[in-house]
Length: 371
Image 1 (cartoon, rainbow, N blue to C red):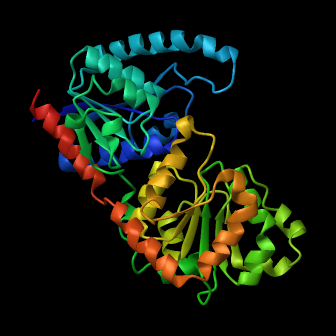
Image 2: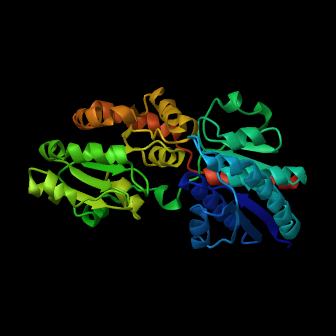
């Protein structure tokens, strides 16, 4: 049996990379390993580390996005695009893929543009409720557009749209029965409610500063806290800042949480950024969530992701600019409002699509069959 050869491109952030890896793994399982992959990313971004760690080969392109502020780096952008498209054509000639899949990011734009030039069956996946610029450019060139939210006809041709959801990690598909293990793992008090605070691997400065300033209020509320600070936050400052040194006994602070299944299992309420992957995970694990969208993303898509949930009474939104004055108070109000918690749990569960990776695999194989 001839192996199916697949190029997967996307990166820059975990929100592009991890769904791509999840789909590759689902394809391997579906095709019983009769498949060969080549990932294509940006040569200086995190995919060059994360993809090989997952066991897949990757080639880097000399590509980066436009700077949001005036910068001389923007002068190189057109040359990077041209260089990356030509390199992509070379990769296609050498690898000879049967299908190309794009998950967003500028590397994906160059590779999928080249793939469609060569009439290779192509599919893109849009994780957010507001389409990224790369996918909007590619919309008329590709065969299929997989999306995670309703109403994406405002960005893409309706006849190409398939709602698949966002693929998430397999260990998050079922966290039931893990609470006791999670409480023990994080050394928490089983009699108290647990707040999980996550801001990504680099941390979310506004969230961290808001929690830092409100640490004594959390002590008074008698809650457990699991706090992923990211590597840019110095947690040693807490012992100096807090007027109650014993505060730290109920707070588990980590730069990065690898055991996210246990973190979610322990949590009663979550504070999070509003990246597409985070929202997909939160919907799957069914937790009341306060979203603090990052303002430092293209086209403010995290705010748009959050509003898609808020409009369905599935999340609480605190704007980044308001977080220091409002986040802790919103959290304390939610802790004491069981009815609101249940409402949020019921409504966010409707956003869960646990078989998203399998749905995307269906579409990949469908466009291959029509070649």
